[in-house]
Image (spheres, helix red, strand yellow):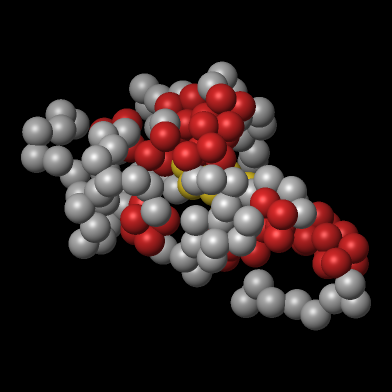
Length: 157
């Protein structure tokens, strides 16, 4: 699936998205669901929208162009934290792990068309490393040349 479809209008497209991206149709679905995002999600979402100026950080669409607030995307998915020993869903909500995206860019990010390292580059410089650097080897790791995506040498594993 390329993520591209032809729909008769926006309502038809929204209906298709709603039906196609649930359960097994969602690119991040792995036999289950993380349910409610847990404590701290609403605050983290609000802070990310404010930080990003209520715009898609990838394509620049504004809230007005989107017709609503942008989505807030977890760069390292909540399910990775939920499945990792010693972590909770709430650990995924740190400010360096969330980025505002329009509906189309959010879908592209979910399918991997926008690399995690690119998404990390939209997080303001000078931010601290989040708990993802201590996840089990390979779990949600972001590998790239981006200085924010590299693990600091003094991180305790």
